[in-house]
Amino acid sequence: MSKALGIAVTEQGPQRRAGRFLYAHCHQRRTVFVTENAALFGEPGSTRREQLAKSASTQILSLAEFERWCGASTA
Image 1 (spheres, rainbow, N blue to C red):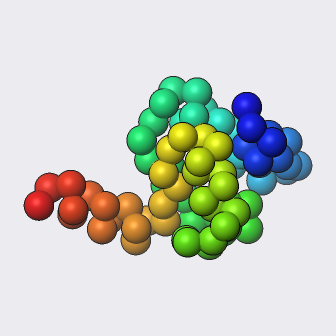
Image 2: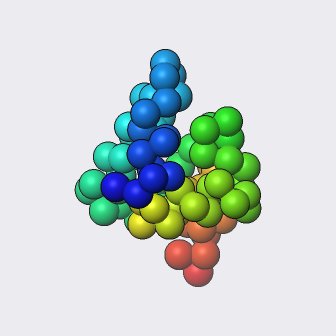
């Protein structure tokens, strides 16, 4: 597990739970992780989000980004 992903997983309280969901996505090799938790995962397009996504080998998308991604997948 990378340092960035480890930081997300070791947060406290509700943030820890969110980090564990990302870890599960990583462990299960999921393609996309959908979240609105910008406090932990960063805003869309942020360096933090990009680092976490790279660490987890999954895309981290907001709901709006996910909806666009689904539309692009079916086009």
